[in-house]
Each structure stands twice: as structure tokens, then as C-alpha cells.
Length: 471
Image 1: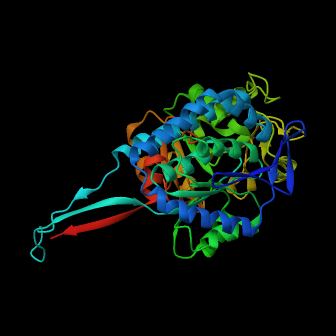
Image 2: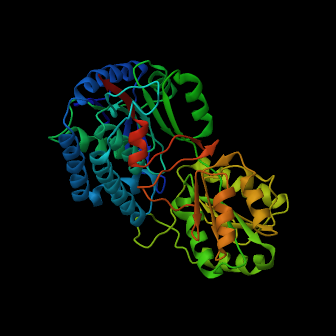
Image 3: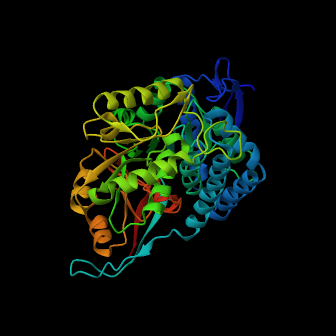
């Protein structure tokens, strides 16, 4: 269980490290190397040199690289799922799903890059122009810094690495300290592939010193970050003139219309609110229900929640395991208890066993309560009465976040109104706002960030357009 750092193609043993404890049972499950600002600078210099070589590697080799990594990952599916289970307490069934999605993300990146191309330009289209051979094409930006979170420590790393590398860039990855082995093992597949661009990927662990060194350097052209609004704000102020792509979380909401199938809506909302213990940027947090069906839906929502299996992440049938740490579990309980003191009514009893926080459905909430207006990142969802679609849209939009929203309705005009008027990066009709397909553009508005992920859209973020004219 040595703590290694990838400096390009060289595996180095760190002198100092911190131990990662299982959020479920407290066992030592991995070690995170302690890197310095100097380590980060060396990784950037190595990436700068590698990027000059990477842009000359033929596309077929870069695509073969991605395919090789995806193939190796498929062979090691169970081992990677077990690491996810160990390091972040993800239930094993959902850990396997994350590995499968990671394979798809890497595969999609290769397939997408094969079809990315420029266009010819009619330079004589206006009187001021004249005929020429003109076109534009995409070129790699050079160096990408990727900073990733704990909640999907495999697939969200892939969403940055695969598009960047297949486009011909070099990457310095700073992964979450909560899942160091997960990032290390995935990086190993990229680095040890026979098709790899030498030194195109480095992995450094560390604190704010490492992060600020990476972000503030003049070497990277793109900073791709997934995490909190507070850190995203620091990155924006520190980065200087470079591309900054930020996925900063949200406060996802849905509306239950009178025309909706309440049984279906409740079952999907229970999954959307509590999957991954609510530790999802698009975790369903606010459910706005038409007043005429509020009581009926609340009953079905509580029933659907009580059917969820809670416990050891190593059990095949477990749906909900532990939160990432004690602080997260304590915060969740404090927020619920404060909401109850302010008049909220729990439809499922608040209960905590160590880091496992049982899913909690809250009624009679007000919009000033933290469990409603702030991102909880825990298995807590609130039900709010509204008077129709217009009231619901106004309340859903009344948030500093705008990542994904949804509406359950069989009324076409209501669906169209939601699509047109909801202020979010994504709108889902007749499913939970937690729904995400890795092929789609993903990102938000307002404090939820800037830029988009998804292989095609990340490649666009991580390439530059060059215009060429030949006379």
C-alpha cells in the first residue's frame, strides 16, 4: 500500500503520506502521497514538454490509446469497483456502474475525436473578401490541469483525462485526497499503455499549495475543476488568462404536476434524492408538488424511501451506504434538527449510525431553511406545496444554482413551459433531475459553473480553433 506519485511515466514513492480510512468501517484502505508546490511545478514542466510531442501523435494512435485503457479497465472491473467501495463507501452495485460508465466515457472520447473536424470557409461571401483556400481546424491547447472530487472519483476523472489526452494534450491531475488509489490505478492504465504519449499524464496529490501552484502557473491553458463554489471562486480569481471550466454543484429540483404518474414519480424521486447518499451535484433536493396532490404524493414518497436498503456498501443489495466523513454526517443531522425546530416535519425519522445517515423526507419546510436553499450533499429531500406550474418554475429558479431541474407531467404545454423557462443547464421531463447520460453536454448556469463536460463538449473546451487562409 505504498503511496506513489506519477510524474509523467515515472512512478515515484513519496517520502510522506497520509492514510485513507474507509468511511464505512475505519480500516486503512489506501495512502495519499503528500506533494509540494515544487512537485506540482515539476509536473507542469514535464507536461509542457510532453504536449509538444503529443500534438504530433497521429489520431489513430491516440484513439487506440483510449481503446486500450477501456479494454484494461473492463478486465479489471471488479478490482476498480472494490477500490471505490473501500475509499468512498460507494455500494458495490453502484461502484460497478461507475466503472462501466468510465469505460463508456473513455470509449466515447475516442469515437468522438475521430469525427471532430473543421470546415472550409467561403472567404468571397462578402464584397470585402476574395476567393481563397480557407478553413479552420481544432488543435490541442497544450497543458490541462484537472482537479476532481470524491463523489465519482473514477468517472469524473475519466471525463477530464480522456477528452484532454485523445485531443493531443498533456494533463496534470490533482485528484481528491479521499480516493487516491482510485486515481492512481486509472492513471496507471493510461501511463502504461503501449500507445501512450510519453509523460503526457502526471498525478499529484496535495493541499491548497499544490492547487494554487497548478492553477496560478502560466503553463496550463485549461483548468478543469469539479468541486465547491468556494474553491471555484478562488480558482477563477487565481487562474489569470486561461480557459477555466467549472462544475460547481447545484440544488436540483423537480415539479410533480397533477397529470403525473405519482407512483412512478415517487419511485424515481427516491432514487434521485438518495443515490450515492445524496452526494451528487444533481442530487434531488427540492420537490415542488401541486397542492391538490401534495398529501397523496408525500405518502408515496415516504413509502418509496422506506423500501431502500441501507447498510454495508459491500452487500450486493445495498442502495445507500455511508457519507464520506463524520463532518458530512454531523452537518446533515444538524441541518435536519434545525429545520425541525423551525417547523419542518419529517416524513421519515431522522436517524444516523456513524457515517450512515438514513434517507430523510421533510415536509412543511420553508425556503429559508438550509435544507432547501443550500446544497446539502446528503440524503435529505424537501417537499414544498405549490399552486401550479408557474409557481413551481418561479420557486425552482429562485436559487443561486442552476445545474439540472426536472418536471413530472403528461401535459405537453407544461413540459414545453418548463423547457423554455427553467434557468438551468439541463432540463429533464418525466424523470429525476439526477439523470445524466455521459454522452450529453453537462454543466450549469449561475453558481453551478461555466463550461460543459461530456466527451464532445470537453474536447471543444480543451482545443483551440485555428483559422487558415491560403492565397
